[in-house]
Image (cartoon, rainbow, N blue to C red; front, side, top):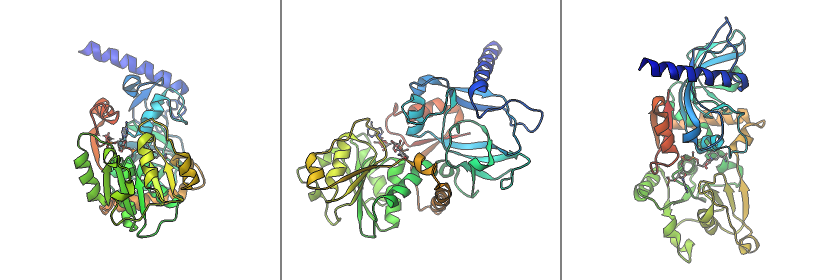
Length: 368
Ligand SMILES: NC(=O)c1ccc[n+]([C@@H]2O[C@H](COP(=O)([O-])OP(=O)(O)OC[C@H]3O[C@@H](n4cnc5c(N)ncnc54)[C@H](OP(=O)(O)O)[C@@H]3O)[C@@H](O)[C@H]2O)c1
């Protein structure tokens, strides 16, 4: 047993030295303030996440004068994290890299020039940044946004990527008023669950499309409890007059596409003349097809949304205010979504669930 442990430490050290040479976030040891050793999920090449990731131990790094050392508490596994590891996301950290993009942690120590953060504060990286799947992170003060400590950690860890996307998409494309209606596919996703609730708070109705799968009846009930007006499986929409399925709802001017393929065509069918479909995800990995007549006779518009672009613009402070608002809704129980908190030690099981290898699962959130 002792021999096996020694061998694994030796591998770990080699992994660390390799990382230390090329990963800009890791700095050399100093006799000054130093972070504790960290455990991290790293990948040295792109490929299937369950094959290329491993958990390693890394030495502590210097906490420079403008730096903050954060002890991570929780971080989710989002589809974009998987895409970054696969190497198919348009912006990827240089290799070798540490996984994860958002999360929440507690400030452990601060450099001498840090002004607005103190040990014990809770912070999230904002804009989100790579490398949240590790136990200790050292980054400059400006990276961190302080949040209220009464936030449930699973919500604090997940509040940026998906809820903020839902909030922005509901306000950035079409002016919606109380009584209006939106349509979306991928409604069981965290973005989808947030869209339903944030729309409902504004008096906006939602038509929701989910895929046919084991547990779809339970998923429908769950979405209705969140405030969904209508929930259809894709097979229920194989009818000639799709709008005939709606009873008292107005035709939607805005649709959200998380999936692509046939599911995106269903969103388009619900839209009213002049309506807009915003694509933000491609979970089926299938392209969107649209008929010529949809452009000519329905004058539909197709748009796209990318949070990373928005948050790297001059809108960071606006986004931070929106995050505080969303966290406030979560604390008040007005914004909920399904998650499973999983011990960091069970990372590979959580990853398998996030990869869909064990069927549909709630969002996996690592607890450090
Ligand atoms: N553009 C942006 O800035 C931005 C920001 C945030 C998120 N996103 C994207 O939004 C999407 C949802 O993210 P999330 O974190 O909210 O999702 P999530 O909570 O992890 O849920 C995954 C969703 O995808 C569905 N799904 C999984 N595999 C599928 C497949 N093969 N075909 C059809 N549907 C499938 C799941 O349906 P079941 O419930 O049936 O399993 C579920 O609704 C992702 O594509 C993500 O990358 C984009």
